Length: 143
Image 1: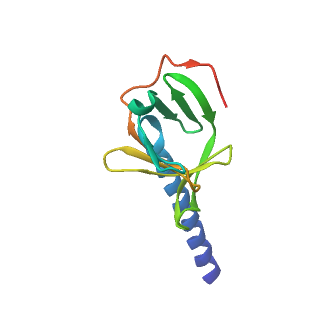
Image 2: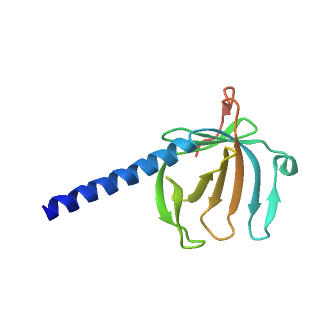
């Protein structure tokens, strides 16, 4: 009976973890418009105005596409996982791209996406949920 109880607790814990990952992934899916980024070795802040570039991220259930001025610049597959951050050793929701790069993420109560590169001197970026899809984007580069 004790073994059965432990097995049920284990199954429940695994299903809760999957449910949390699915919930985190669902909050990411959509189109996001870049607001600002801060970081780098010099701690600078960049915005669409300061660098004269519009950036949009389109996140689907299996890929992340990055558009710069309506041109597809990157396409990556990804997975969501709870991982320990190298920045503060705390477990966080992470987007792990097929390239191996990781971003911790959070969608706040104002429906803004916070992406924080999980490396020293990386950037922390802020995005707002977009109204519509980049339907006319030209695809000239894909990574």
